[in-house]
Image (cartoon, rainbow over all chains, first blue to last red; front, top):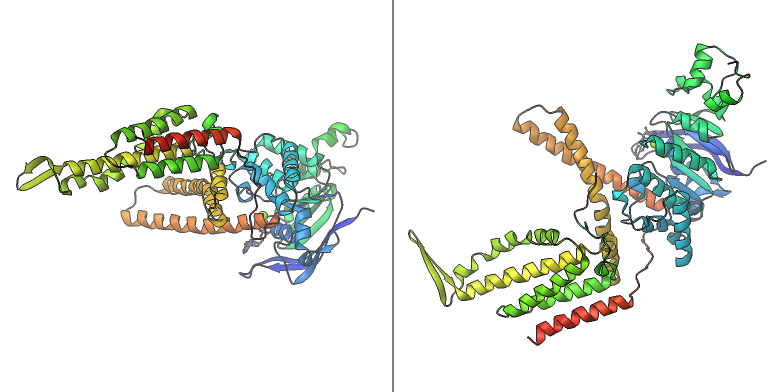
Amino acid sequence: MAKKVVEIKGLEYAYPDGIRALNGISLDIFEGESVALIGLNGAGKSTLLLHLNGILQSDIGTVEVLGMMVDKNIREIRSKVGMVFQDPDDQLFMPAVFDDVAFGPINMGFSEEEVKEKVRMALELVNMSGCEARAPYHMSLGEKKRIALATVLSMEPEILLLDEPTSNVDLKARRHLIKFLNELDITKIMATHDIEMVSDTCDRAIVMFEGKIAANGTVEEVLTNSELLESHGLEAPILVKLFRDVMHRENIPLRLNDVIEKPNKYKI
Amino acid sequence: MKHDFLDKYAELDSIIHRLDPRIKIVSFFSFIFLVISTQPTKFLNFLLYFLLIFGVILASKVPLRFVFKRSLIIIPFVLLIAIFIPFLKEGEIAGSYNFASLHLTVTYDGLIILFNVLSKSWLSVLSMLALASTTKFPELLKGFEKLGLPRVMVMVISFMYRYVFVLGDELMRMKCARDARSFGGNRKWHIKTIGNIIGMLFIRTYERGERVYIAMVSRGFNGEIKILDDLHVKKLDLCFMAFFLTILTIIWTVL
Ligand SMILES: Nc1ncnc2c1ncn2[C@@H]1O[C@H](COP(=O)(O)OP(=O)(O)O)[C@@H](O)[C@H]1O
Ligand SMILES: [Mg+2]
């Protein structure tokens, strides 16, 4: 049995202006899992992510990450839980790429040599070596997203949180990101609208609706259930719609590769 | 959008570009200091100062056209203030003019002051351009910080430099959105939409600030920004500074 890395119990949260963003969330996430939070805008996905590294804290319910209560071990948790924000312009606040990627490791107290090594490693991981001196505002959005990822990877987190990683990204950058996430071997939790990406990168899908968890299961279970998805304002992948709603099959494929690999199972 | 008005040629590679920012800051500010404290009538000195800074600019490979065009920006402002001095200053009269009932006289002393103000400000601008167009902005900031400018001020300038373009883009988008929907309309309405745009920009800036702060906190920020100090003075730097300051002092004292 894999180690439990996130344990949320009865979490409720209201923003200072009274909007109730989370209404009783209970959730366990295990080491090495890749979990998708899907749901409409305003469902509370980002709010939930912000609880996982203690940016937001609530009196109602508990959040335990890597065996530590979040409210009491903030520094330790923030160095182990890396969060990639939706808009890289929020994440890249330094005038040069190097300083941005080095920001986390320096705050963690590493020596100069170690910091440099971590920056080099992180930029290499996202395929952006050699742009240490460049200024973020001269970069394309795809490049900025990769640097934003590097600013977190340089801290070598045990859990990676991603908020809408593929929003506004062009197809090539999206493919690159999906491939990258698949090769990255740590616990990942991502909030997204991109159902196709979920089927390519995640093991588990959690449907959020009005601050609650509406469904929680393997990607196969959740994404092939077009009724469930549609009743929560989401849309099933096109293959699912075809096999389930048009052809009324029993076995429903999620990805094109499933069909190609097992044509007999899906009777085509 | 792509912006590059401040350090447009800072990516070039030349001896001057490779110098340590602190060396450049100290050298170019000494230049300004000495130029300013030179007597107005030492015309030869001003010529030599010019040749010195011209030499530096040549060595930096920054296009001369760019530097001179930029340097002229300051002239109108200086003229606006200084153009009346020759008419007001008393002394030996260089010429007098009559326009209807208006009697104007120009004095030599006044002209010298005008020359003094113009040449000193222009030389100063040239040296600042030589600094700014050969140093990447982040390095410039690091240099200033190492020389004792308070960290808070450096950070404020750094954030400004980082986000002024992001906000500029946001403003452009809002302006496009307005233009795409406005067909005529009267002046009052236009002023009202401009007011709305400014208000929106303010709110967005505020929200942006909050999000940036959250992103910083997520990476362990706790009130103090730390950056790696990777500036090292090299032999080349010291040579340049020695050379530059020696020539400068020679011009200033001997001539
Ligand atoms: N900073 C904030 N202040 C007040 N309300 C907020 C703030 N951020 C989000 N909300 C509200 O909380 C709810 C959940 O938002 P969010 O977690 O951002 O949803 P999602 O990421 O799923 O789109 C929404 O109703 C949103 O309007
Ligand atoms: Mg969100």
